[in-house]
Image 1 (cartoon, rainbow, N blue to C red):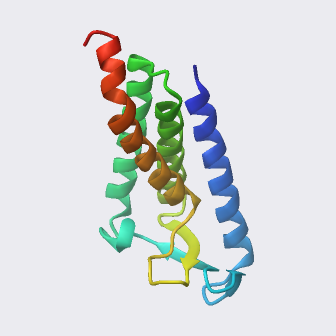
Image 2: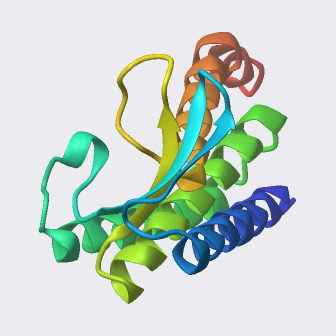
Length: 155
């Protein structure tokens, strides 16, 4: 079942489309209130990773993205998990890593544009959201279901 690949493709499509719209319509000083008191839209060129760690080391981060994506695909093809949470998680993780990886390879920076105004938090993008949700889902899957499935399979 390749639902994870479909989720990954949709994630990349939405991520890259949203970044394209930001790049084409926003300058470095433009700001748009999307949800008053909660979310603003701004255009930030991020040459680092989360919280700007490894800033200006795009080639290292790009390499990590590629290796991570290859690892997910290999894992999915070898293990062929069937549980919906693991499939959704893999799709979101792969799509998010590909989305930011594409930026790093093509632009040499990641386009971030979602700024939380309710509290201070780094500006992020849809790929970051997909990676975060995917990671949370894999944690939930591991805690709630992974051991039950192993027991049922006699591992």
